[in-house]
Image (cartoon, one colour):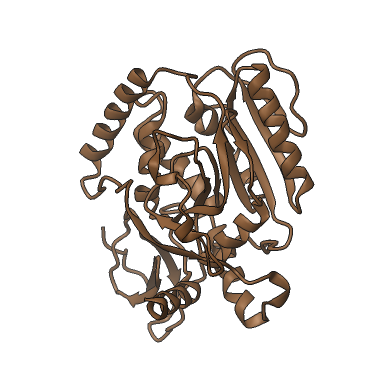
Length: 354
C-alpha cells in the first residue's frame, strides 16, 4: 500500500524496538502492523532527525508507592482459598502500596476486602480477558497489574521491592519463586540469584502464580487472548505460555521472596492440555514467525536495585522514562518500548560481571 500523493512534508516512520529507536524517512512508506514492532506515522520534514514521540501515559510512575490493581481470576468460595486471599490482601495493604482489586467469583462467595466481586462463570483467562474483564482504562490507571491465583499464598515477598527490581531491570512481567510448585522446577528458589548484588533471574517464561505485569504487557496479553480465541483455548494455557514471545516481554523470577501453592485441582489437566494444543496450533498456523518459548532457560541475573533514597536524579530519570513509556497504549505492539538507557546500563554491568 503506497502513501497517497499529496503536498506537504513527507511522513517519517519511527520504528520502536526493545533496545532503542531507529528512524527512517520514506517517500512512499508501507502501512503495516508487524509483530514485535510498532510503526508510528508522524508528519515530519525530511530533515527531521528526532524520533517521533511514543504514546505515553502522562502520569508519572510512582516508584516509592506504586498503585497495583490486583485481579483474582476465579474464586469458588472455599474457606481455605478465601483465607489465603484474605492473608494476601492484608499483606499488600500493610505494605507501601496503593491497592485496588477485582475478584471474579464463579460460585457464591463472601467478600474479600478491598476487592470488588464480579460474579462471572468461566475459567481464568475468560475472567482476565473475556466479556466481563476489567476495562483497559482502569488497567492503565495503575502502575502494575497483579494476577493472583486464589490457591497461592504470599509468604516472604516484599511486593514493593519486587516493583523496584522490575523498574531497575526494565522487566515487563515477574513473579516470586515457588518452592512448593513441584511441577514447575524453573520457579523453584535459586540461591545463586539472591545475593547482595542480585534479586532474581531473567527468564523467557514464568508460570502465573502471583505475577506482576506492566499495564501494557497485560494489554498485550489481552490482544493475544483475542488472537487465539477464548473459545479455542478455553482454559488459557497457550495464552499464558505464548504471552512473553508474542509480546516481546522481559520476564523475571524474584528470588528475594517466595510464594506457596496451598491447593490445586480447580480444573482437569487433560482438558487443559487439549485446549493448550488447540490454541498453540491455531497460533502457529497463523503466525509462522512465533517461536515456542524456552521454558527452562535462565537468561541472566536481575540486578538488586540500590535504595531509592540513595539514587541520584541521573540514575532515576532513565528508569522512570522507561517505565512511563512501558505504560503506553500502542495499538500495534503494546510491549515495544524505548528503554535503551536502562538496557545499556544493564548490558554494561553484565559485561563487567562476566
